[in-house]
Length: 134
Image (cartoon, rainbow, N blue to C red; front, side, top):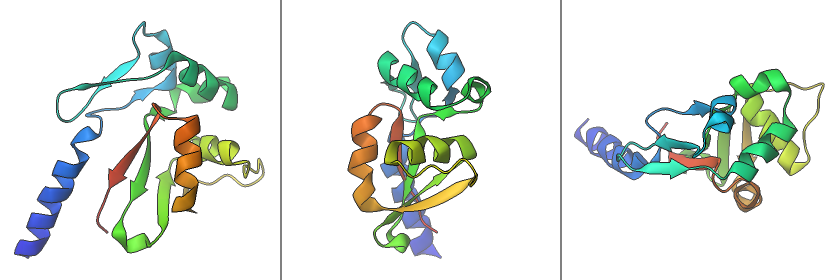
């Protein structure tokens, strides 16, 4: 049990770059300097043009439901894969990858890690990594 406690503490330390709370795309678009506060107390700023690009990928009503940054979950358990949760988050990532199917609405997707650079190149400020243990 002690090893689990140590691992969880280390994972928390590694994830200090994650936001305390995420904000909706709609709210961030209204801000002059779109940003969120991170767990370590620092600020993470979003590029306005990236927020506008995201807007172009989703329906108007979805802007209130897409919370940023989109979290890309990594764990040693999924050897070579990562996960994304949330219907709109999955929709955005699949549109970027060219795999989106309007008839197949998913609330979670597991993708191979080699796709991470493609996602991060398109969405450098609106995505982030979370390291998790399962």
